[in-house]
View 1 (cartoon, chains in turn purple, yellow):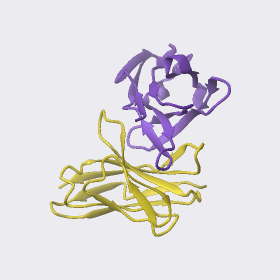
View 2 (spheres, each protein chain N blue to C red):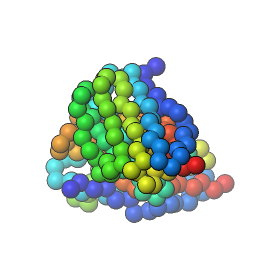
View 3 (cartoon, each protein chain N blue to C red):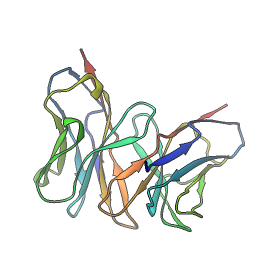
Length: 114
Length: 112
């Protein structure tokens, strides 16, 4: 079965510092990969997605992610974090068995310190 | 603007009571989903529907029921059989195989 692992439950970074959130997936074929962000008490918003092609994907709010098939990873990065980036981040993989579904990781909560 | 509307935002349930969470979308999406979110557990799939009048159980369907009589609507009923219903419930829709999911703003259900 497909799965998504986000090894870090929470991460704290200083404002202005760089950020990398880790994501590993388990999927037999070429995966459909997503990163979502969730602010407290709200739904999820799509940051970026990867289906095929260029392995470095640009998203909204200055985020990017790199697909590495050899490592089964899809890590999210941002060169300079802003206080407003504090939120929970979810990596997800789409699967098409029995209808199209999305499998979510457990999430990484990002704290930003001044 | 197109989107997903969940109501109510907060809901309280008494012991032995069924409650229904509303989810409406105007995105013309065929597929709709219900997730439960608990702290530290990410999103767990309750039910999903790929087309009107059809739906499938997800990973944690016990104690829940759904209907899909209209393309725009996918209500979730939390029955009295669900012994631990306190959670944040998210509804989502999807426009196709290579499309991301769109989410509502959620309903927080608590027990009185």
